[in-house]
Length: 283
Image 1 (cartoon, helix red, strand yellow):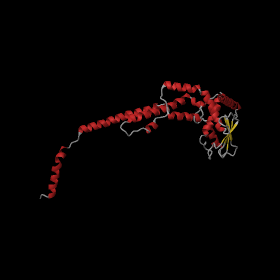
Image 2: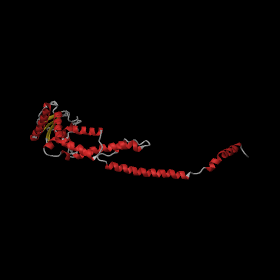
Image 3: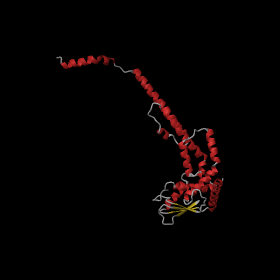
Image 4: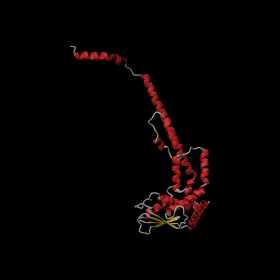
């Protein structure tokens, strides 16, 4: 018995049977797509290895930050990213050059911060002539850089001194709010001030502060001593090389400088600095 449903199925089959019968896998197209896929993976592998190598040989810091800020979602990866990543390499290179130069040894933390800000703002092209010229000029002024930095450090600690007035340092200084409430950490910037003082006394004593590791820095060493003695009932007074230090629950720290010979040297440098300033004003 022939049903109307069978007629409908036959009509449908006849309607698309030609298309269905002619369908076949586009093997050549498949080959081309797969070839492009494999080529893309091969180029990607080479590219990632090249990026890894570029990151490893880049002076200073790694390039992960530059890669993270790159514009990967566009059709022109090279033109949209090369200049930005090259600028990042220039930044890293200038940072590395200054670190390796040891010029920062004669700079206080504020000068170093300003220097880094200048590099971040506009890093020059890395060219050997530019590099040599820059560092020749910087090293020519290394003594005045140290002198000015020394004066600035003690001015900031002895807040009663006006910025343009000559002064002498004494054998003690009070650093207000140096430690946080728990006495476990330096408040912001205070550790840098401790290291600035230590750097000055090390240099005046003929030692190289640049040779100190992070753990050997004086802010770390003093903080460790304070932590180990903060619960002691004994008098909170400790000594370390160029310092005697007493601290209080309010976070204030009193520093004594027991090396009078180094204090005298520092005062001579301060006097020489203000002598130059006063001479320049007289002209």
